[in-house]
Length: 153
Image 1: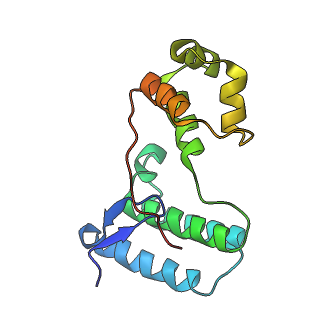
Image 2 (image 1 turned 135 degrees about the vertical axis):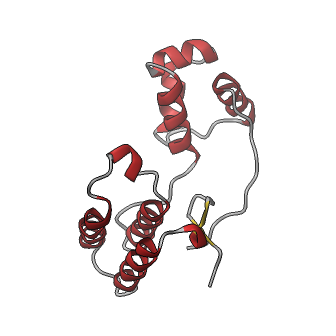
């Protein structure tokens, strides 16, 4: 048995630390996943089944449970395979960081010293940022560039 489940975003989840109930639930979900149901059907399935084991918990607690994160990842893999969604890229991470740290994209652009239309073009895939522009954006977010292996589906 594997010790870790690795998500599409290269996050490792310790599956040995899961509770017995979570292991049983995950095996049931994986069995259904391997049948390759429609993406939406799979999403509804695991969420409905999950409610049976974590129904009494707060939503903010549930979304951080390791078993929830694994099911979310399986859902994403199925959606990508079926052409209904895409693998997240750096732009998704930039939007999440900007939205977390700033009240608006305008506020972020003022801090970074870049034009809003430049940011918009980058985030909407109409422009690839230069390395210099990417550094300006990351500096304003307090981040740096790092490398990680590509994940295979």
